[in-house]
Image 1 (tube, helix red, strand yellow):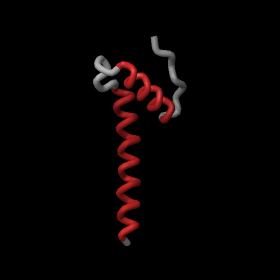
Image 2 (cartoon, helix red, strand yellow):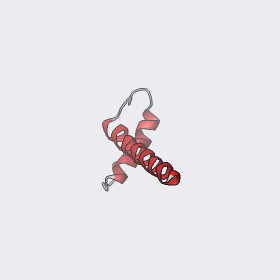
Image 3 (tube, helix red, strand yellow):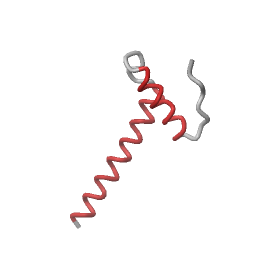
Image 4 (cartoon, one colour):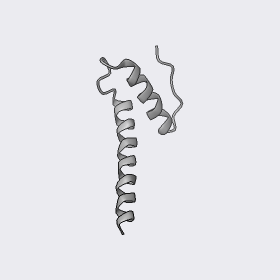
Length: 57
């Protein structure tokens, strides 16, 4: 039973991290301070959504 609880918590944490990557990447949170991080997260988020990545200027 204890392993089931630990596995469930780990699965929820992974899902939360994936959701945050998509939200941060698509919305551009703190875009001006971290341009390199924004571009990387945006590329990951676009690919996770099944879209074709666009070239950034």
